[in-house]
Every structure is written in structure tokens, then in C-alpha cells.
Amino acid sequence: MHDLIHFHAQATPAKKAIVDLHTGEAYDYRHTDQRISQIASYLLKATDGERGGRVAMISRNSAFMLLMHFACARAGLIFVPLNWRLAPPEIGALIEDAQPSLLVWQPDFDALAAPGFDIMEEARRFRIEDAGESFAKEESDAFMENADAGEDDPITLLYTSGTSGKSKGVILTHKTVLYSALNFAQSSGVDRNTVFLCDMPLFHVAGLLAVARTPLFFGGAVLVSQKFDPVNTFKNLTDPALGVTHYFCVTQMAALMREKNPPGAMKKLSHLTAMQTGGAPNPPAAVRAWAEDGVAQVDGFGMTEIGSAFSMSPYDVSIIREKAGSVGMPSPFTEGKVMTAEGREAAPDEIGELWVRGPNVTPGYWNKPAETVAAFEGEWLKTGDSARKDADGFYYIVDRTKDMFISGGENVYPVEIEAVLTEMPEVLDCAVIGVPDQKWGEVGAALILLKDGKDSLTAEEVISFVKSRLASFKAPKHVRFVDDLPRTPSGKVQKHKLRDAWTA
Image (cartoon, rainbow, N blue to C red; front, side, top):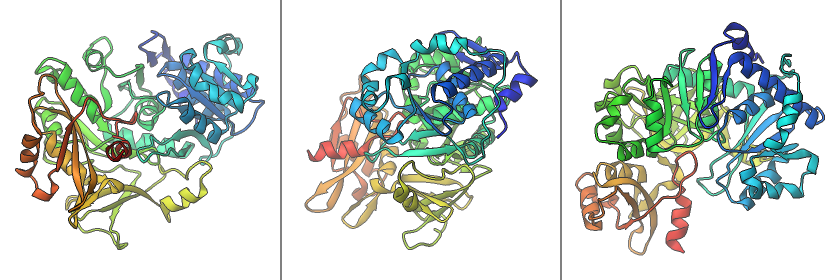
């Protein structure tokens, strides 16, 4: 597979590639290419040249973490970034599953790395800082050829965010990451002039593949930030010295930027080519509010298993406004269809399960052949998401299939209710789950996070508001006001935790 970083290092060596906003490190393409070769050379020695060995990493976002990802691909190794927000036993289970050849971590995460000590010899594990001298000793002026890799060779293993409670290792290959980048670039206007701000975690598919890897494929630049902060992120997005053109966030991050910055300030983001959103369905009211500010909030749909696959276009805000709530159309290298439970393709606006196929789709799950077989129907990946396609070919994610509940014989989709709740001016965030009910079988329970100073809202007002817009059977029967909602790093509410807590 061709090494695009090396290509840009030859074509535009002095062009900005990666900037670490936390440390101030800045790399042009020549320097990026050299550092990748240095790290790849070191990794090969540390793993005794083991082809396909896994390199697990526990780290906050950094330029070095991104360089490690590319170095593993160049060395024929598999990069395995682990979610540092997990508990040590959870990290231990992932390490046990991946069986890495190397374990690398930031000093802050000694406790998280500890479960790996029982299964890995001391020479195969080290803190990032401890490896600094070793990396520096590697030749810095010699390009290390890309490993003799085929398009289907794995280069990254990403563990799913676990909305259903159990993570699976998704295999990403040279081919899948290439076509995911091509899809994302076409849907968001990424090119060599792009400057993408990345504060999505690099252990997540959106941060690593869409936000960080795509602009580097095309000769653009990535600004790596350790974390999202609604005020500081807005400051970075509007700083002319940084020159940000693109941003990706989950819908809750966008809502927090509106909440925590002065009224009317979001108009300052109208210079962005696109503000991509994903990770969870985007309420139509939010999309329209951004459109009123002149910001192309471009909603899309992807998964760890498929990378970037669906998106609206940033080039016509009137269509974004008209189709608010849609995740757009399949990207150029992806096919989609909606299938009913009876096994037929759904009619326009009929709800079914979203199926996807294309060169961006994973070949399967690590060490889980049965789960891999169950996920596919021929070449089609069954996403587990309920969706509909309108007569114009625009797709809408209705809900996770497992989150739909049946109340009095009627199918109820929580996302539909959540979209209504977010229209209430007092509501910052919310989640709706189905809970047991003696009369109806299941009923809705709304868990609501209020905006600052809006604590006068009552449960009765919430239920009445939903009933004014939806059928009465869809209105929640229970309302709780909460201080927080458990979310995955990709922004998805962990509804299994909410259901467990409700019935506990």
C-alpha cells in the first residue's frame, strides 16, 4: 500500500502537517515522515520484527500518539489505542483479548497499564517518556520502506465503545481506512488546504480515522488537542492564527458550546467549511439553530465497523435545513439499504435495520468468529440501527434496534422523543429508555439534564410538551432530572447502564 505521508513529504516537505496544541510541538511533512520512520524502526526492534504484532497504547491525545499509529502501519504492526476512561479491570480484559507485543502508556496511567504486567514481560512494556532516548537514537534521515503489506492486512484494532455493555475489537485494514478517508473527504470538503481541529479521542474511530487521518491523506493539517472544552474549543475554532477550517464533534459537544459561550457567539463559526457531527442522532432543532447562525452543521453516520459512511453535504445550507435530522446519503464508496424484519427492502419512510457494504467495511471482529458471522449477511454488515430512507434518498437514523421498546403493542423509538425534548429551552441533554410497566408492558422514562438556572421545569410540563407534539403513547410516563448521563467517548448514551440503574 502506498505511503501517503511519505508522498507529501516529498511533494510538499515544508507544509504544516501536525501541531500538538498541548505541548506546542509542530511537524511539517518532512519531519512527520522522519519521525514515523524513527518510531517504526524502534518498534520493529522492540518486537523482534514480529509481523502483525499488536502495539497497545494508553494515552491522551497527542502528536506522538498519531505518529505511533502511522509508524505501526509502516512497520507491519497493528496499533491498538485503548480507552483511558475505562477502569483497570476493563483495560485488563482488552489487553488479554489483544495479546499485544508491546504496551506503551503515559505515566498518568500506571494503574491502567498494571493489568498488562501479568501477561507481558518487562522488556515489552514501557512508559512513553522512558522510550524517548531510544526513539531519538534511531536514524532520523533515512526513510524506512512501508512493510510489504497487502490491502487487507490489519493496521489498527479499535475496541467498540460498548453501548451494549461488551466491547469487541474491530479490525481495520489498509483498505478500510483508505476508503473511510475518501468517503469522509468527499462529504466534508477535505483537501490540502484543510486545517482540522481534533479534540475527539484518538482511541475512537471518529478522532483517529475521520478527523486526524483524513486531512493527512490529502496533505492538509491536523491540530491535536487533548480534550474538548466548550470555551477553549470555541476559542481555538475562532483563532485566526490557527486557521481552523473543519471541526468534528458529537451533538452534545455542539450543544455545550452554545450553552457555555455568549449568546450569538456561534455566528463566528460561519467561516468553517463544515462542522461535522456524529456519534448520536442530531435533533433537527439543533441543526436548524446552527443553520440560522450560518454554520453548516453536517450530520453523518459512521461506526467503528464502517468508518465514515453517510453524510449531508456542507455546500448547501438550505438542504441541511430542509433535511434537518438526516444523516444524508451514502458516501461515494458505500452502499446502504434498509431491511425489514421480514427480510425485504423497506419502502420509502418505512423503518427497518440499516445494512451497509463497501470497501470501508471491516472484515470482522478480533478473536470473535461467531460474532463476525452474525454481523454479516453476505457482503452486507447489519448495523443494528433502525433507520428509514425518504423518497429523495436521504437516510434517517431512528434508533438503535435494541433501544426501541413496545408500549401497549406500539413500537416506540426513544430518539424521536429525545428530539422533541431538546426543543424545550430548558433542556441541555436527555435520554429516553423503556422501563417495565405492569399495565403497558413497557413505558418511556426520560432522564433530563437541565441548562444552568433552568431548574424550575417540572415532570408534568415535560410530559405535556411531548404530548403536544407526539402521540400520547410515546410520551414518557416517568421523568427524572439528573446531573449527568453516562456516555461513551463517542458521545453515545450508555442506555444499558441507565436501564440497569432503573431496575436496581
